[in-house]
Length: 155
Image 1 (spheres, rainbow, N blue to C red):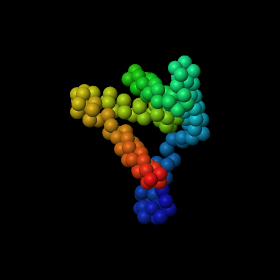
Image 2 (cartoon, rainbow, N blue to C red; image 1 turned 90 degrees about the vertical axis):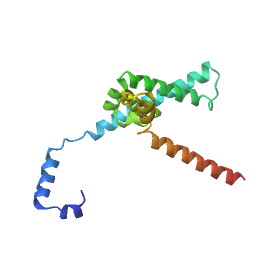
Image 3 (cartoon, rainbow, N blue to C red; image 1 turned 120 degrees about the horizontal axis):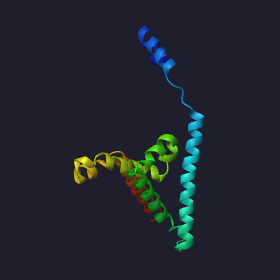
Image 4 (tube, rainbow, N blue to C red; image 1 turned 60 degrees about the vertical axis):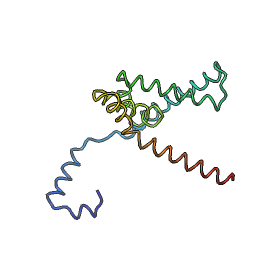
């Protein structure tokens, strides 16, 4: 809290702030960073291995191997979310499991699973993009703007 906001608090509120801060558990920031780094890195290394597999065994080139690699990572993430395993990994790893595309797939699948009791159309279809909808909307809009800039510059 900024010092200016602290000045506006009453004495009782300032005592409570000090009381709450003293009892707030310390976060192991360094350990959490190490976990996030290794889990995120492991997911990325696994994705790189998938890409290498698609290039070696299925004759994709470096550019076209990206699409099936991402699709495979998404499918694996959704399956792990459905079985309840990805949530345990995310709880332990933190941002390391949320940053790769697998975290995005987990957020969409989790929302769909959570609202399945409301039906397929209004429950699953209507709620699965609540969390991820803004990411999709901004991504599509950004792609549109970049495409327009590319057309104008090349034009």
